[in-house]
Length: 93
Image 1 (cartoon, rainbow, N blue to C red):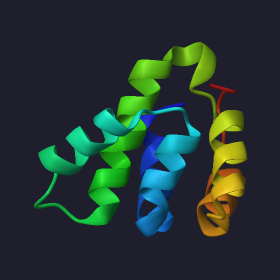
Image 2: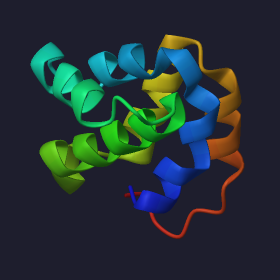
Image 3: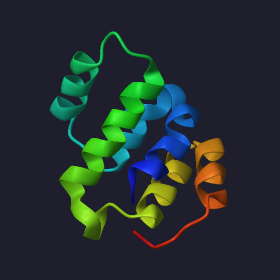
């Protein structure tokens, strides 16, 4: 996973960003901190920052494109899932 993957979907997740992060095993205090830190930003920016945080917390072994695709599908973010699947992948991470 790279920041390019996060950029690819951050605007497509929308109001489901909290649900996506929870499904990625991010805890509620961390999500609330993101919400507070970016309270003057658009939802897309909160999602982007949350995804970056997830990749840092989970590390390269767990923060994978496959895991993100599974989570997007589970959260019903089909536009984000489609965009991620159509993105040219250089590696599996």
